[in-house]
Length: 231
View 1 (cartoon, rainbow, N blue to C red):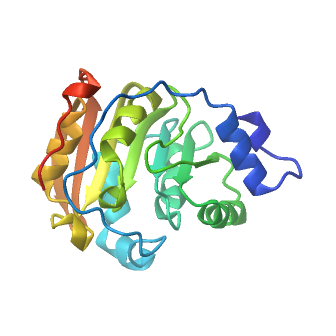
View 2 (view 1 turned 180 degrees about the horizontal axis):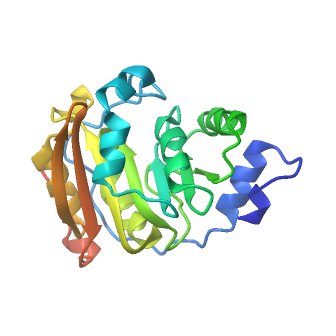
């Protein structure tokens, strides 16, 4: 990852250098695609940041997820960087935030935000719909905030994400309890999909901006046995 830090190298080159040093994943097997509509990405940000702050969204999520100083947190599908900007001060200089997104342009805009306030604990990772491409055993908490319904291959992404979690690591999904085609995710359907690839539900908590679902890795099923949940 050192190739991605400092120097006069372009942002895209640094992102590509980070991806290049990650080990290749083995084939995950015949995991299904979701049997429900996948919402289209219509914006790099979800809602106005001031309104989200007023509703206490990030404070609620940080509390429920038990994000503490020194932790490593991944903001998967970071978009405008709302959570990067709020989690980086919490984890502090001994912690780390992975700003992850599909778009190099989005990542560069978040990079500019972090530079403006001199956050030095943020790393940038360009992923794909099927692979977050986070380093192995690097993450305490993986956040997926108001974007799970936009993942084209959630079963595959979740299965591969398992290897990026540290022992005791967990994933946290925030969404609205409504159909995926309406840019939400019904609670029961989310739990079914995440559990299908071997995660265990820790908690499901309502907040003003939807709900917070937290999972931990359990026994990984054989990929060929995983069945898509019906939406």
